[in-house]
Image 1 (cartoon, rainbow, N blue to C red):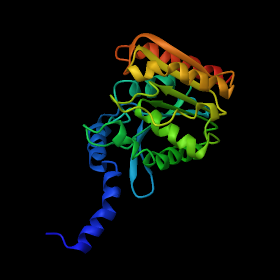
Image 2: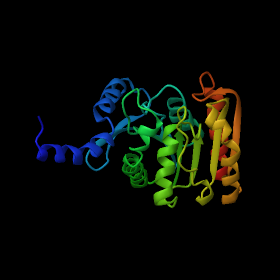
Image 3: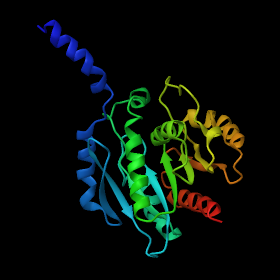
Length: 258
């Protein structure tokens, strides 16, 4: 039976245990994909107490200083076959270097409210990724976030502001689990950089239900190059819609460099 001292220590440590991401699962995901990467190079960046996997894919033209940071959805990895891999490879042909990064993960059964506890763990990863690209001479950096990574990156933007980036693309923005609504709206009205809100017509209900509210906030920010677009016949993961997704993203990116 636990004595009082042990019980107090356990109570103090329990919040840290609950709020920590699953680094072992993250390592397993990385081990599964690193050897199979055909395009790009695996790069491990430092996030304070640990390193995390990224995949940097460079445009052949050495003078290109435009880059995107790509963030996968809940529980996946930086070479995920839906959304992530098509963009990280496809955008190279459109003149954008890509850095796809591993985001914090939990167990497979973890829900949105559990993930909310680890949003802050993504902050050091986002900032390390930005610094990595800046050291490589990148002058324009745009974040592309899908699903849960939209929540993570928006939490970072709410706290840090958008001074370090030049644009934001949210794919499937606002996806949550049943009876687990967002606690507060995304800070879209506070952003000074252009925003592209992209989602499918066959999305999760919360994404579609709140599309009007997101658009209103985007318009309040007042950036002329911001846009919202719904892709017909596309689901949350853009299955079988890789080319449509790539075209929509690359077309919008083209507007912000003019």
